[in-house]
Image 1 (cartoon, one colour):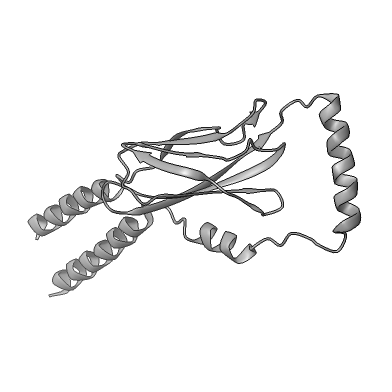
Image 2 (tube, rainbow, N blue to C red):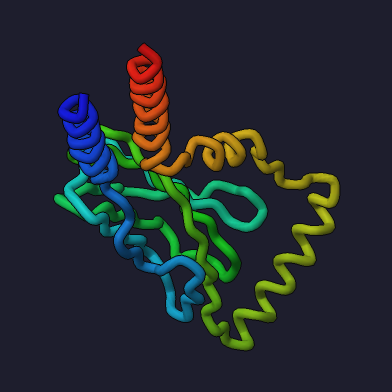
Length: 184
């Protein structure tokens, strides 16, 4: 009986450590919460392990408008994407989805702010352009896809959750088995 318990615990620990070995985000450029003060045309994400082709990278501004990411490339542990134009000043959210070398899909998100100093001439031209566009498009408001955001947040369960549940269930089964054996 003790051998059965020992073997059960050994297998639980072996499978738990392998299940926890998923690839996570190691660093990003820009970093989460960073305020970028230079013109930005590229985003780079580096992961803890090798990633497979087929990853996605989505960037949206504070209004929920998607910013097109061009030329997404994946090489070894890094995924990079470029923008056609430099990002305007404002807050941005990055949502990434990758497939780790072990075949498991992994997702996450982070945010950053672009705050590039603007010359006075550019500020005057921008103010005039905004005033003109507000007069023409007063009734138009950007819509944010709240359901997609909620789905991404809900699908980001901790990677250790399933192994913990399996361990608890095995411990309960072993406990019931031991209890029944002692009664006999």
